[in-house]
Image (cartoon, rainbow, N blue to C red; front, side, top):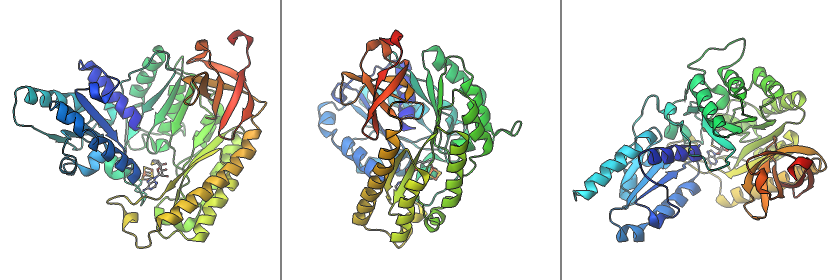
Length: 440
Ligand code: SAH
Ligand code: SF4
């Protein structure tokens, strides 16, 4: 979601006559978009911004802005903590960025006293402002933000306070955005929201037993030129039959569901305010697998939530094999400001969190090693993204199930859908050769 918001601001800056440069030292304006979900992300942003001291000394006209969740939660406090920051832009004010920068630049060129701006108010309709895209040549995949905010209030989570109330964009506007992307060569879109399956529940009606989200998925999938549609993240609550059937029946909808579990212990799930039990979660996983046999399921799990006992942790570990996950992201619980869990008395030691994190990763490796072997020898379609991060002689792409695949690089394949046969796996990475002679 932050990547997407940054793209929007970048496009706005370009429209405003600015140019994107490669390095901070060439820039007149530096904007940092920030995440607050875990403390580590905030610390990293603070370190990066603090390291601008030298640049700011050399170029007193340099404007430094902080945007996003950290800006939203810390507001003016950021100006006191980070003296080089000139501009603080909250999560509902991205569209004001250029205006504020122009104002600050005017003030600087007329040598007025150094002014600073903090824009962190609520803005109704701000969810409709994240809609423009800067695309790179041969880019084939894009994110589309369909809603903002979250009303769930999981007790560990800062998102409801940094992103505000849940609110959705109209289906027609999203479809127009996707049509424009398809015209510019995009083949795959990923619809983004905090709980995408609750999309539009306050704004739009069900039609023929289909939720607004399923209506949206079907509309986006029928846009000519769009071969693949993904979404992230759904919540196990409200993941109903109409959605399972859509994934099963709509050819463009990829067979991959990222379904955050958070914990395998019902006691902890309850304390987290998640609204489901481990049994309910497994029931949903089983329904997905029985309706969509090739579906890949990934998840998020938090270790070390306050009060998590050995038994609670064992229940999370047991879920990895029980749900037969294809991928999982494990997070150490990080206390966040103004959240109920941060105030709970029975906080867990960092060392225990680390051990539990390692233990879950080892359990995941085992399941994934067993599952990944089954893909070897199969034919898959990948969407080639471009060079592999580790080896420029290779291209990387994703299967419909979101498995990461490496093939030998060939410029003709960049941005294309390529049928391949999987030849090898290391667990999370696969190696493949193209199948069709026409791609030689
Ligand atoms: N809206 C999404 C999640 C957004 S945050 C959902 O509910 O599925 C992404 C992930 O960060 C969460 O799934 C959770 O596993 C993790 N997370 C959120 N708050 C956290 C915290 N305080 N400490 C550690 N991990 C956290
Ligand atoms: Fe945070 Fe829970 Fe909302 Fe996800 S559903 S954004 S974890 S409060």
